Length: 267
Length: 283
Image 1 (spheres, one colour):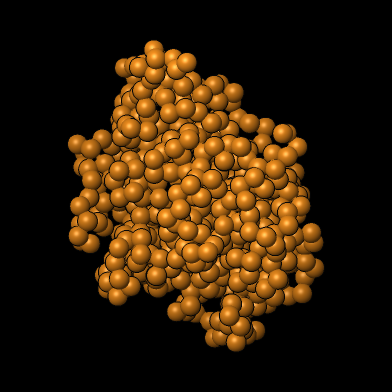
Image 2 (spheres, rainbow over the protein chains, first blue to last red; image 1 turned 90 degrees about the vertical axis):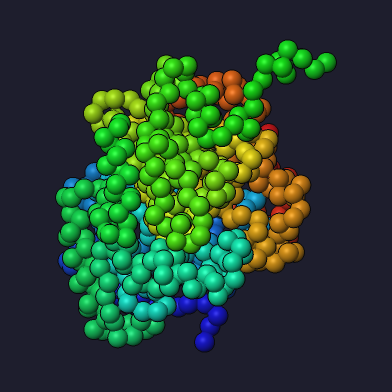
């Protein structure tokens, strides 16, 4: 058992099925163009690199190299498809435990590296690429903002190990001056504070959730199901709006819609 | 000799609240607040956790003119819950930026100015704060298809978490000596990585790495300004007049990867190393 998750790597390998990897990127990134529903799509994963030059980013965290590397992988795609009527889809396979926490990271502007990634994903979406986030593991905080959260559609696998959150429990408890137990009690009754994927789904941010047989090592059935779902998501995006408004509308996110209505009326 | 007249006439931005900051930066008589506190659109999540909500949820949205240019200002109130973004405040900021982009698509050249005093996601509304910040990122990128977005980190809260990424997406960034800009708050880094990696109580150390002066000297901010309303307004105005940069900082992946490749990552890092690495070719 390794100390880091291999889900992202395994799903990347299964979905991109031996396609040639894009070169010149940091070793912690896996990027390949493979077929999805008869069309080419770019699959991107951030994976653990135990030899990462940055010691605080060796367990799959999104750090400086990962942020800028994601940006350059997506930029390359935008440029290559610039004059093509049919833009390749981008599938962000999300299994990111956190952003990298370290002195080197802060000093060298990890916020700027993550902005680079978010910027590229957002520009890909605005340029007409279907951007799909596939959550197979953790999707935490800044790491998720940089890798996945700018997607047109988010799909999550149903599993206790798939979770979205703003901060790990120990740190969240410290910052909000609570004990971890108090935090867990609150999380059980306040949907946006919960760590589980069902509570997250109730916020309306997911397009689809899917159950699979073996989330750690996907079976052929799993790959077929997920591939089909990704294809449907890409088709759902095609020719439609390019913003993130499809995430609005859930009861547990009612205020987000109400605020926008009021702003528009007063604008 | 200290110029006493200048000193007597200068007015600190840092000492002002979010609403006063927006008022101070806009041309006299043009400030118009949207969703003001009297409309009491408050967080639906705080009261049930025993936290007193605020009538504007800590975000002020104001339209007006800045040196004659139409702008929308989104100002975060650092004094309310550490400037954290919850569902309502986050939606106010995202929604305002979305409408500014829509203005431009309809031929109205609205620009945006973001006054960023924030710890990032409000943990009491965790995933809704995070989702709102993703919306804010999306809207900042969208608006920059047409007009610049100027971020201002004046202090004293600084700009952290997902909102530091928002700062990184801006066309231009203005900082003061009081400003700090970083992804992870010092406490959290200490919690996650240990005291030796990051001592959250060592304030000079933290400013030396993430303070406004260091960010400017490393090319991670565009203007380093005194804490003075008139000067800050002048700089914002100049940047708005410049229009969009040829390439904003968040579009320079190749350059930053190239620089990071030059760095020896073995020893722990010093502020001077960052300045040399990022500004070497210019200094």
